[in-house]
Length: 487
Image (cartoon, rainbow, N blue to C red; front, side, top):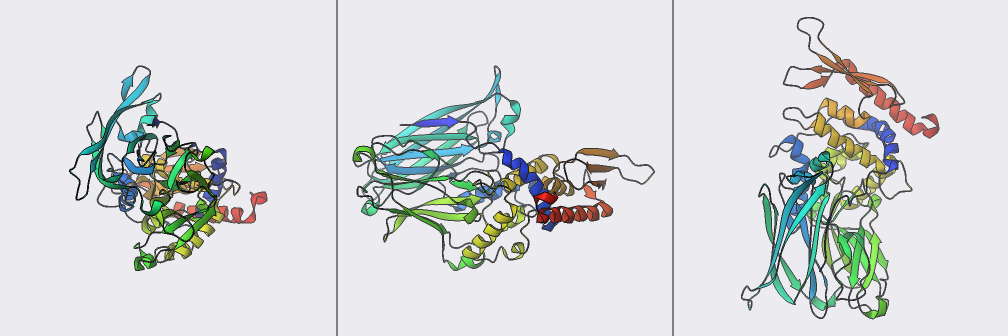
């Protein structure tokens, strides 16, 4: 059995992400001026979290939490020793979902994960064939880390499971607040016809030397690849392969979505055929490790399949999202969250596009925005969603998330101002104003004013500043199009 709990798995923002800031400011010239309203079922600030959780829930994940306790987890099943399977559970949640308290020089939080597998089927009597209960401690050395909304806390545990059909119940509980999420899923082992194991999105993995070895992998609990980060690695195992037979990995669009996808048809948007590496001494499964090409896969919900040529295969849900915290995958939230990005004409038709059309539009957007084509990630999106998160934190107004307000919009499009200058009223009846000054951070200087509307902290761009913003965005776009030598 193996267990891992830790911090900081997602790589930090690379140096190339800093270069994307200039690209973001320039590309924002062609974007829409405002986004749609937040989901009324939740607070505006948490609307994007609720959207992301809805995607995981629709994707068939074993366990999906709430906006207050946004844990996401899934079951993993791989070939074990003899006729058994390795049953794993992997989960992740942001530090902000936990209650931290001071523990010496550190801050600590505690959570619990319980799993039970009960025999199912006509001949089963409901006996518990597998049970474990783990209590985990997360420690950080800086208080700001406790408020992070990113996927940073990870749990993973494997145990062997005999052949049969099972109902698997999982509970994740925060031990201080007693908040918890519970779910039940079903597992059947072995797969029919000795098919390859369902492919597993992982952060890292290595081939197994024997079936008795606990899977040496670090699973991606949310099965999510994000445009702002590095590509996921896909692990596929073929327990029956000994003759160098190839495997086919496919990403298939999920039918039944909005627009043309509602017809129920599905399309293969990416496929790769490769020969798995044989195990040392033929004592374990043949193993294939492949990276997903994010620039070819628009945000969406997919099925990830592994199969032998000419046969069917087993699938794992896959979410291709915009960012860790902004894990929107449906066409509507994607278009909404990219309100300030250069979607150009694609925005109008994004909802109605079929899978292939949307993939082509996504490729064009990626090419227009990516400041460093040599890397597999898009640093533009890293900067964009860092700014979206910061705007949410700083500029929320009654009834609107921070990124939807005028100050939030400017923060996303231009970045934080070099200086903020308050302007108190000079005469009776005037409202106070804030002036944002950009002198060094942009190649085009600009001053923008926001007037206090008197509606409990609501600020709006003044008419003159709204025109100035449009002008500077056009100038930045012209600089971008003229090439780096002009900027």
